[in-house]
Amino acid sequence: MTAHSDVVERLEATVRGRVQGVGFRWFVALEAQRLALGGWVRNAADGSVQVVAEGTRADLERLAERLAIGPTDAHVIDLSLRWLPAAGAPTPFEIRSGGHPGD
Image: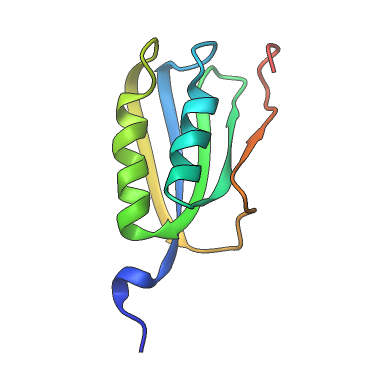
């Protein structure tokens, strides 16, 4: 029998604030890789950063805590989280190009 803590879940997060041009995607990728999560991160055209990650709830919660802080030069003003069943996110974790012209 699988313990609840071993169930793979999906976290979809949108991070708003000063989160583009400050190494946020690299920061997220390093944190996700450290936690052995699958998924991706990208800049969005509206200036936010979108994150999709899959792993155990405990590891995803650790990632969410780090998203709320961000790297040194970032300033997070809003973090939206959506919890879903796992859907087969890519592994290893990827940095994707998004809708931002600097990508």
